[in-house]
Image (cartoon, rainbow, N blue to C red; front, side, top):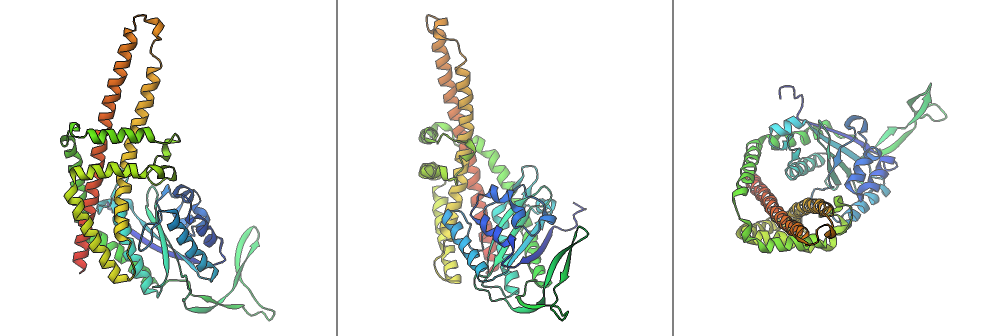
Length: 423
């Protein structure tokens, strides 16, 4: 860790409303994460610096995660209106040395696991303070976490729906090709004087950028011990799961799991993801499995969770005015995570089932064994194997659900500690 030069780097650039990067970002707001990842160069002013991300997470804003098509459409319209009214678009990149994140308990290189929710929370606080210092309290921003080998980074795009930024007179420039190279030169009028134009002030003060960086660093370092403790607890809880809750108590969970498997759409298995549109008709069935698990093993904790997030939502309502979707967002986050745990096990079960079916098709024909004993033995073996695999799948599912519940509980406890320290 001694050669870590900077754990956090914050940089900001901007482009005007006529820029191709501005239009490209709007175009990709409502695209799938993979599409935005593949086309990052079209809207990323830092392509030469950041390189191509390995993947991009879903968009989030100061107040919510952007998940549904309606959320994306609303955000896209805000950015489009800002562009039509001549707003600048500021692009901020907060880049991390992955080793520094790991040292402070937010990242595991071995498992390639990042505490995205905690990092999002810290980002919201840091960006809010930076924009406040720049006088952009009315600005709207969206962000996504980009994964790179050496530097996980957060890409933030900010606009003013109603431009209120100060205007200044700036010299106008144009690009010209000279000997195969692009040269930027000032535009002159007929008298040879530089052409000036009133434009919104784009450059952020260095002190504002430092405010953002300082907030990120302080929160991450101050929470280091808690983060490391959480990671330790998670590892211990995963090990304990192997000794808890025998499958004999979970016949209901077994049946629900198998019914869901029989209802899965026949499509590319990579599409078996909770938030994929193809899974929308089965969301209620997936949530039913999560609810069944919670009712059996975490009923009191879930009731406490409901009370806690409702109280926090009321605090946000009082602080910001209007209705808060904080509680609904937290519930949705919990069921999304648990739902993806269910579907991960469904995919694994399906893979084993298809492998067994291919194996059973290779068994000898009935005519080879007139008495049918061989075929009967093969069928009995297949049914036993299928039963064992279902039992094993549900056992793994429970471990996964317990792990997600523990992570969710620890995140809530951690957020409470932070909120109490700020009161």
